[in-house]
Amino acid sequence: MSTKFSTLESVKNYYGKVLKTNSDLKTSACCSVEALPVGAREVIKEIHPEVVEKFYGCGSPFPPLLEGRTVLDLGCGAGRDVYLMSKLVGEKGKVIGVDMTNEQLEVARRHIDYHRTQFKHKESNVQFLKGYIEDLESAGIKSNSVDLVVSNCVTNLSPNKERVFSEIFRVLKPGGELYFSDVFANKRIPEPLTEDPVLLGECLGGAMYKEDFRRLLSKLGCQDFRVLSSGPVDLVSPEVQRKIGMVSFESITFRAFKLDLEDRCEDYGQVAYYQGTIEGYPHSFKLDDHHLFHTGQPMLVCGNTADMVSKTWYKNHFKVVGDKTTHQGIFNCAPNPSATKSSEGSTGACC
Image 1 (cartoon, one colour):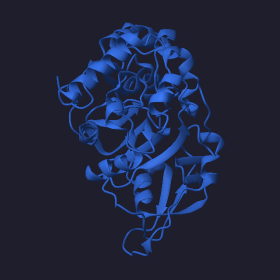
Image 2 (cartoon, rainbow, N blue to C red):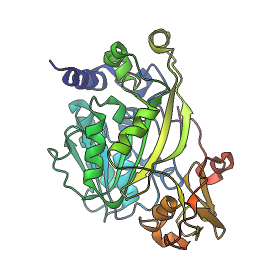
Image 3 (spheres, rainbow, N blue to C red):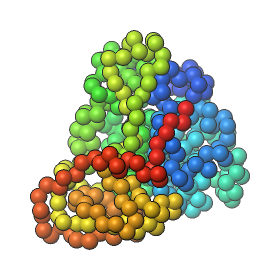
């Protein structure tokens, strides 16, 4: 049996047979460290309790402006995020969930009609597919067919992360967005621990070293991704602490776009204005941990940031002044602590 196959079987067993609800988790890795965004806070109250109790995510990967979009949820599990986005995309949108675990999919599919009725949809706008996130083509997901790919504490579970992200950028439409949360490590995990069933199931054994993640995306052509928020993972169990307490873990939410961006932030003298027109965000909009746009206020931006707000579905909500005809050199683009303090992007533990 190959190592990659045994890893997948171990993960399927952990999520299909070992874990019954999220109260069985031994760490806070698969436990959301983020508050739900504005549009999702009321929707979660409408999700079936059985679906909620089998949620093992570590973040809230839900950007705004989802109405009418086609969304793909990788490792959808029992479907909490799929159903949440089902309401957000509306009847003209579509949400596809992909998972490899029969037990999780059984729960998800059991509640399709419940949520269709709950959301007052004439027809269900969700679809659950059994498949592997490393091979979305076999699951029937076509190239350039998806507006948004989300994933909530799942990519760490894959033994072939390069294939996962390669597939993500294949299925995304040009200008489409990847918005996901996962667990990352401050160093490379020792090899024997990467095959430990408990550590794998708790989203630790397969966690990528942050710099290796950056290198992987660069290799695949994604030269600039953005961090939205992060929080430490608590190794609650003494057993887990003994095994892997020498490593520090973070739950991080990222966003990336299918755009041709530069590998450094370059200065072209461009200025961007947020127009305050995104529903639920009248006063400010947080692109990432160092770009908090206040409505009507000019912000100097690098060429990559200008493209992110002018060549994606955010374009109708921003005004960008200037182009790339004149290069001014490198752009000083660094995280600003004040950018994380917006009341519209607050964070807080959920469990």
